[in-house]
Image (tube, rainbow, N blue to C red; front, side, top):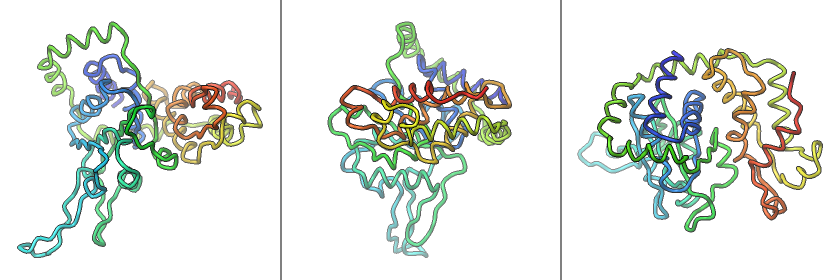
Length: 319
């Protein structure tokens, strides 16, 4: 089973050149049964990434382009009147009812539209007309957003950001990778063959999820995870500087996310137990969007990545 997931990872890396970190994080989120927020400038293969993933797993994909005039019903669906039908009012499902959802440029739509997506994402169901409609068993949202400093955006509220298992930041590829992208673009037919030959059934994902749940997390590792999260809430106990930087720390969702992602990361690396290095490896992507920084931190140019670096230095690592 791990071999099949590794093959999936290799195929994705061949299709999404120069973004190995993104590919690994997508698989972690998928196997942890979560959702991902992806931040990066336009043209960095964000759309291609989730499309390639859905192609490899033989599942459906919906792409929702978020715009200022989008309505919540454009995402979840709406009840329509059909006089010829036996039931006069019929619910027409929106694009959220699919396996993989690409919420493109989520920060370009107003808060009520963002909330509609995130509510469906969290509860895995949509309620309309007194009925409840569940999502597919295999369901994952990858929301993309442009950096906040770009014009025409509506920043996600911190409470909504917390619902994403990971926030991954991506940058430009290296020179060699970008050169290889030129060759890939010229040979999309070959890439199509690779995609079709490497596809795996959904059941492999479900089996892999079960396998990751069997990964052992010792009491010492659990304590380390809790200590990291508590350090975000009470930074003054560790450093006066940290206390000046952090206004609000991570919620219990952050604790749960650290443990889940660390288990998957350990499993992907062939281990049946979680080590401190596994927790540290995924800490930035799990915690960066759960921290609210002070004005002082922002004025000093301190971002969430710097804060997480400091946390990892200050919190004692179990032996």
